[in-house]
Amino acid sequence: MSASPSVAEREWGAALKDTSYGKQEFVQTLKLPRRIPDRPYRQLSWMKKHYTQTGNEKAWVNDHVDQITAEPEELTAKMEAFADFFSFTPTQVFKLIKRWPLIINRDYQSMAQQMQSLGFSKDDVSKLVSAEPFILKAPVEKNVQRLEELFSFDRKEVLELYRRCPSLLKIGRPDVKAKNLWLFGFEYDQIKEMVKRWPRLLTQSVDRCYRPKMHLYEKQIKGDLSDIIAFPQYFSYGLRSILMPRIDALTRVGVALPPVKQLCLLSDDVWCEAFSVPKEYLLEARLENMYKPAPAENI
View 1 (tube, rainbow, N blue to C red):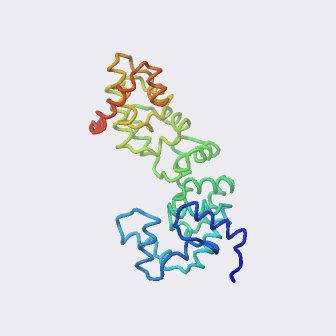
View 2: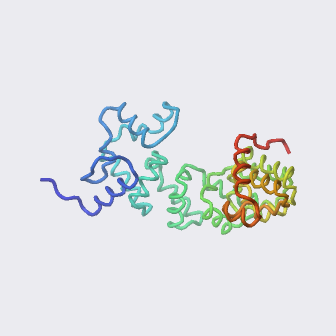
View 3: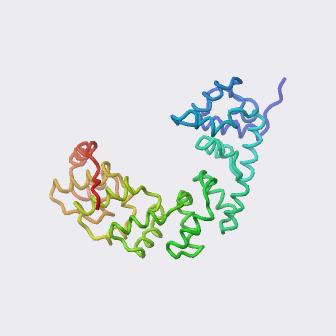
């Protein structure tokens, strides 16, 4: 008769069940690796199904060969060591592995020490990794220095930006994003102000975000750049889902376009009521804009 699972085993088992890794019943600790079939091609199929949507099978095999060939006990030990180091719960570990299976094979101890040497606390590092695991393969020290030098930030300011936006740690060339914003008419001091207000600004795509939304702003909204400086989150709102439909709906009822903050914020119902726009006008505009090409002229 097998022994009853310990509290720790039940915790890992419950985490596995919560993260929907399969429907099989579990009895012992960490059933995930034990579910991987013995034959390699079946292992690969199982891992791909649960971990990735990539279409490049060869690249995926190269990246994850350690997980495909590892013994269950080895995977178990790695996961538990990873959880202990960052004080993660089993559920957190499974979710991170699902996003990036290679994470438990990284030299995360050295990276965490490097981040702490830059001024992050151990708790900061755990939160950053939990939010954005791929920072463990980023040149964090160089990225921190580049951001400091670009905007003359002090270390305290930079660390706070990263705490607010962990994905910013992956950006190795913030100067490229800043240069594009400068080409759209913003001064560097204004860009610095926008970054402090909304650090995600430097993670946005030039072609999919900056360019079409600046074109829309100049050609249709026709406001002053100070409007965007005060609300840089403008760049995060969808062209076809929010910006273009609301502009069209306001134009249809003859209401002057408001500052971008008022244009973007609020749910559809509250927004329509605030601007006396029939909701069906907004829905019709959204459907009409669904297949329109994005504003993409060079500006």
